[in-house]
Amino acid sequence: MSVIFERRSVRSFLPKPVEQEKIERLLKAGFEAPSANNRRPWEFIVVTDAGDRKAIAGMSPYAKMTADAAVAIIPCADLGEGKASGEEDIWWVQDLSAATENILLQIVEEGLGGVWLGWHPVKSRVKAFSEHFGLPGHIIPFSIIALGYPAKPSVLVNRFDPAKVHYGAYGKKSR
Image (cartoon, rainbow, N blue to C red; front, side, top):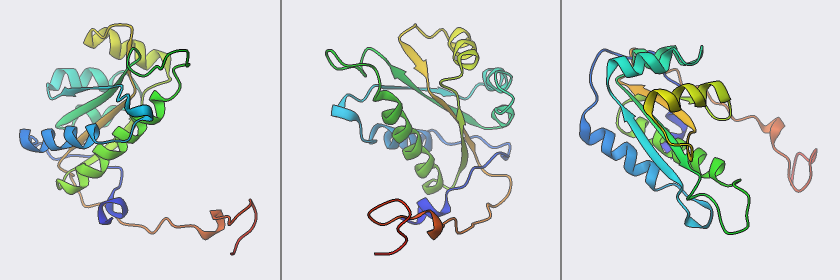
């Protein structure tokens, strides 16, 4: 459980490449995420090219650090895989959230740092990314995970807030 408590959003990186075996373990962590009805509607795009990372950085005012990250991993939803017969496409967002978090936790395990950048449902970001990387219409970029070796150590903070814990019913503060 220590990686859960050590994980922080890292937005500045050393100019050092990430080893391919570490990238593979990050991807394996994403594939181990839980998924509604085990549909596993994910596809992952790994971006190491500096020009492509710079392009991603220009697609959102919140993605600037992607230009300096060593790697960007983009969990994408394959909407053809995330839908059950007669059901709306609603569960893929949860599936891709779990995959993104798994990767973020494995980043800590690998001695790296990273940050989750929201992409879907902002249409302008989805469109810009899809056009740049040639995604077909049924593949939706869900998030961007910018990662690399952290430029500085993270500050650990206890974020537990007992005021936000309710037992049995909202507003009930103890058992």
